[in-house]
Image 1 (spheres, helix red, strand yellow):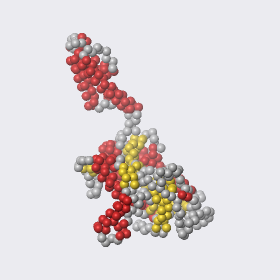
Image 2 (tube, rainbow, N blue to C red):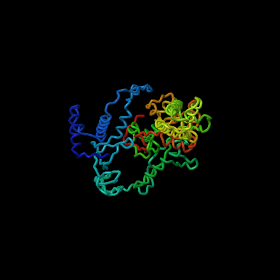
Image 3 (cartoon, rainbow, N blue to C red):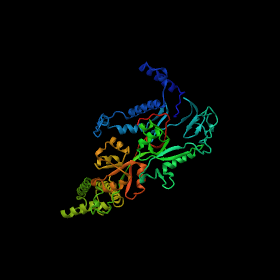
Image 4 (cartoon, one colour):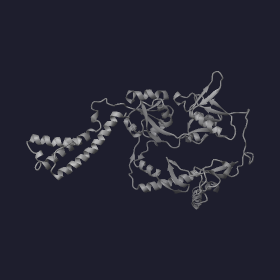
Length: 500
């Protein structure tokens, strides 16, 4: 569990004030309940401080809210503050010494510097050491130590094992019988996801075999155990993952190995392992090849307003040059037609920096310097944009904001929690289409106007598996980290009652 310096004066003073206030608000509660203060309470207190410090740095903000009418509940219709992004940015950059240690967010998650290693004996727990990312396992915390990282438990305190024994159990060194651990594996698996997890039964030998990245992680963890742990894979049938979680909880399976996402409601029924895969949400969009298909492509690097402003500024520069030069410069004199041609030839020749007309007035030279500087910036931008249009494939949208405002249909994996995430972001549910993995290609190829989708939103590992098969036509854009839902393996909790 996370380590907190409970011996510090601040922690003791906070617990004292907390107990007094708790007993004052709840006079019928005993003293034991009043003094209990978990790590989550410490984190909550530090989180409130982080919010207060961020708001203080942000200063005065707009009281306006953005109304949302995409939800069907009162909570979803609550407005969102226009300063939400600003306050979020401040919170992510907040760093201070809190009750729980140094408060610092890394990728949106609290950076815990040390964990306590506990020896659970009956209903009590005893500290046997600490684990830190820098030193590994150690008996005591010493931040000034120069020792190397250690994964050995020899440096920890004495551990009392089941049976009140100090001897480390050897486990089943040569298991020859007995009950095997029943490990549920989802079946069948869409061919596109079989690289993650898959289970097959040989029709001739009736032997069950599992494969995929998730299976490799599970078997690698089993091999690290200091004793043998016999297990067998059991096909879980067509059950949804929520049902698979309940089946682990009620004892149908002893454990489940799958690309499961840790959620609050699932954690109420089962215990999860440490995460083995970071989770993020991205979208796949088609690449539009519009290279050299339009004869007027040379006009597209600049929009209409910029073309108009450039033309007006070009004419204005020519008029200014004529006003400043025609009295003292012979090249700007003569018949009106000659003067008109000279002025505009001089102005447009500067587009290629090829003007050869002599300039007499210093004011004219200053005006030309400004005009040439503007042309240099405009020409560089034009060249870069035109080169991109002629050589690089374009994307219909570049981020989730553009996707939301596009009005096009958005696809997501059938049964995925991504749908709820999109609805919470303000996407209209009528635009969301649930798809199977095999339907991704056809939906993207059709496009939103022809009954398909403009983009497919999903968890990044699954989208990368799709791009492995279709990397030439599609690309991933705008990854959005979704903290708190890493992929894990689950095992059942004993004596747990689960409602069907």
